[in-house]
Figure (cartoon, helix red, strand yellow):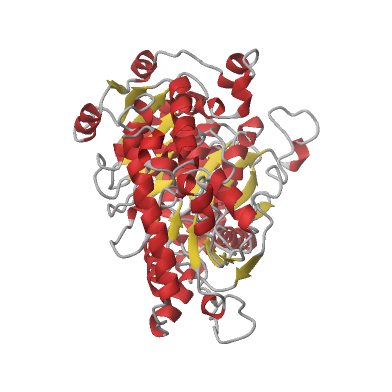
Length: 596
């Protein structure tokens, strides 16, 4: 649908219709004057879902969440000035997490810039190097040449959301007055020359990455052939930038089984929820490598790394000490080795390696089988130690998180907030076959936009969505609650309220008592029942696992509900430290550790 009411309406409607034909289905709009032509075009289109958000930061993270779940860009629209600047944190996260996102910022025409025209800043390359592509559109003109230019520029911008990897595109959109759809007869002449069928010929839906180039595994150019190296190996799987398609996860399982390698899998990767009963998934590695004798027994001769390194600091320290060759699968060309170790990057995709191993079956190696069994044996011992520790947990939080997996329906969308919730999940989330999808904002690891990201994930999802968050992360984005009426979905927030920054309680700075509480823990002492009441959000305090399961099995009367688990960060930190210390002596008999 192209609107020939006036120049701005023509440009905006042509832009929106082109994006729709390319596959755009979701827009997040922030109200403002200079972006009026874009807003009107989107509102009147009729086939693009539009969410309206007062707060630009919340809006941008909502769009980010939608892109995380669907793998398709949401269109993010705002007016000129500082409104556009508020998009920056989400754009940074989208860049590093490789989430597609298309940003349109309204702007004044060049003649009104640098002259204090009001609500005008320099929006040229406003987001630095974080967009994959960015440009400023020309001012609208009443010509077919302009229409052709705009169509091709928009087409290129949409494609750049997907190539050379998933990411952000920014189009700065200057508009002169009139911004409202007031009739201009001069544009009507152009309508008589415009043939929509001819104009949009060849414009079809495009919403996927470019296919991978073929790889010849017998070529000496390809350095990553694990079976050409010593046979004792393992696979590390961390957060995978660009998302975790079902096929990617099943390919990783196939590779592990073909090579007979154990898989050390971060809980922030959905692979832990794809346990097939055949692949050896190791989940307690953070605790295992704390025991010196175990750590020495488990040293491999090579490692295959898929995605980023797991979060665990203990694991990273172990990897630095053993300095084992690591072969990193990352076709996006990023450096994924913060340890600066012996790494080689593969040009192949995970799918290509899985296909190769499917047709080139490797013999079972007894040494590798023994090595993998050693990991299994140590994991079984670690689970016994953890189970004993849970008899007297340090507050509700650790035990609740460890059992959460058994309370969720299959294929739940689970967003895990940064800081302590990420650590609880990595420590205690077990392998399972429920195929939950795990989402995290680990591009820049910030706590901003957590609630809004979860709302974007939930929006129009057919599966239940759960946000696991601490109190500070939720408070940091409490404006997101304003979008509750816009969200089409159900979001359950499991709030781990320990009244402050629990992650700092586990760091050395906690010993500096004169500054710790005020400047680092920063307790806010918020009454969340009252806060939820203000926004019309359902709220319950959870005191035991039974009540948590009961609540998760019931339908909330509101689109968003908060299940608050009150914890004590001092007790939790002390309990965790005690558990980690016990693993330093895990090779000793249990009675020496006080478990029997």
